[in-house]
Image 1 (tube, rainbow, N blue to C red):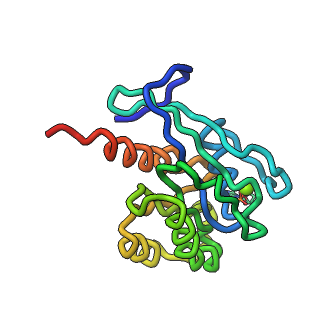
Image 2 (image 1 turned 90 degrees about the horizontal axis):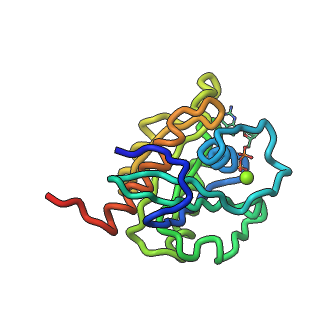
Length: 183
Ligand code: GDP
Ligand code: MG
């Protein structure tokens, strides 16, 4: 069971990264998760590099530090410091942009060049609110996730659908890797 908390002290701190093509909604997923906000245009806002959110998992306060590419991905040169020390990732594509889905394997390969191969990753199909413009099916995405042996979730940063759940899935994965569930 996990829920949000506003406290400032914590038991554990985890670094997560958001990866995926430009304009898939990474910055808005971060804004929704950490501040419950949404922006119609964040293209030019090369703003925060990371933001924090506290979660409680199994009674432990987890300080989650989420790194955004801060626009670097537009130039296809995400600096190594971005990945360094990350323990989980959300690999995001836009459900209305098939190219962004095709690029997921490239993003995950790049991630694995900098991180351990077994780090928890959730494949995120964002913009689920744009139902009429959808171009990537749930079956296609699920098949890729199975092939990569990761979870798949569909989110909307716009209407806050599944956003917290996607982050919690990664954080929970990291948590139980460090502290195995007692039987
Ligand atoms: P980033 O480049 O991956 O960080 O993407 P942004 O967060 O900057 O979003 C790119 C554009 O998509 C912006 O115009 C956002 O308002 C829009 N956007 C992001 N998430 C969603 C979503 O869930 N639904 C819809 N309809 N638009 C979104
Ligand atoms: Mg961005």
